[in-house]
Image (tube, rainbow, N blue to C red; front, side):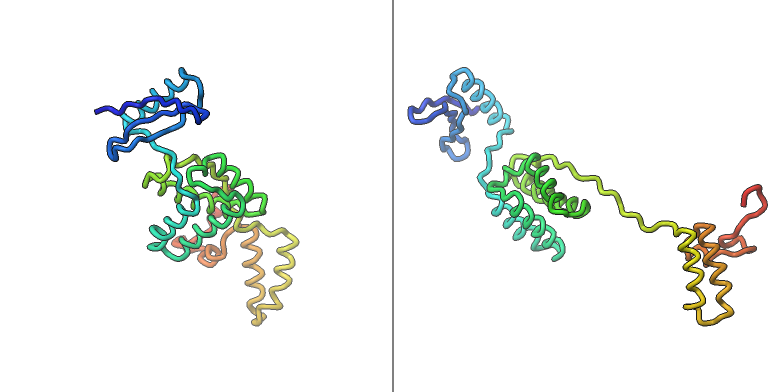
Length: 231
C-alpha cells in the first residue's frame, strides 16, 4: 500500500507539518514543511510522498560527530594497524579544535572546505592536510554505507606537488667538492681517480650507481659511444 503524506496545521507551531504512517513501525512520522503557505506545503508533501514511495527518502540523522568517530574507532579502527587509528584520531583532534561540529550530517562540503582552510592557517603542510582530508572522506564514506548520514559530501583535495629530490650542484660547489677529496681519501694514489669521477658525474649527469657500472669499451654495461656527431 502506498504511503500517503497529509498536512497538519497545529495552532502552536509556526509551520505546517507533513505527517505519514511508517509502514514498518506503524508510528506517525512528522516533518516540518518550513512554510506557512498551504500551496508550498502541498508541494513539499508531494515531493516527500514521492521519495517515501520510491524508497529514496533519508531522514536527517541526529548522530553526533563524537558518536560517529567513537563508533568508527570501535568498529573499524580496532581491526586496523595502530598507525591507521592514530591517523583518524589526529584528524579528529584538528576537526574538534578548528570546527567542533555537533552533528555528523552537518559536516558538509562547505564545512570541509573551511576545515582545509583553517588547517592551512595553522601552518600545516599540504601533504598533511591531504592526509587529514583522506581520513574525513574515509569516515564519511563508512557512515554513508551504514546509512548513518544521507550522503558523502564532495571533498576538494589540495594539489600536492612532490618535493624535489635534489638539484645539480654549481661549478663553485664542484670545486669545493674536489678540493675536499684529498682530505677524506686516505690513499693518495686514489685521489686523481676520485677527482676524475666527480668531474665526470658533474658533466654527464649520471647517478653514482650508473657511473660505477660505466665501462669505456665493454658495451654490455653503460658505455659511451663516440662514433656519431654527438657522443
